[in-house]
Image 1 (cartoon, rainbow, N blue to C red):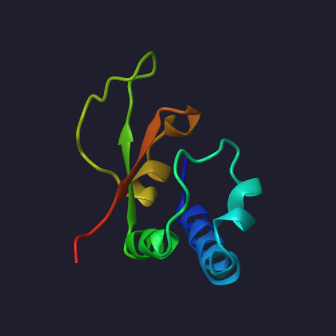
Image 2: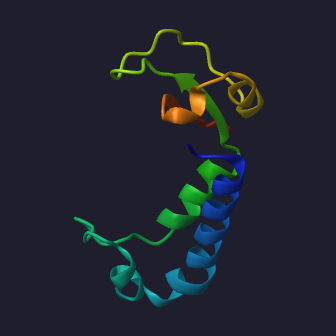
Length: 101
């Protein structure tokens, strides 16, 4: 389950990537992709992703234990998930909310 801490680490990694690697062109980044990108990384692409994730919020959905069905569309906070028994057994889907600015 993706947490606020994980999101902070992703944001920091993207900032490092943007500031330290992007200025040197997409060739420098190529070894860091598990699978090659279909198209070259464009200038500003990482910066735009950083902007999207800067205001992102995490919410969670409960899943059925035996399949992908979602019994309720109520988005839960991390605190609500922690208070709900048996949700840490993999039955939680992470939802990333991106606010429009």
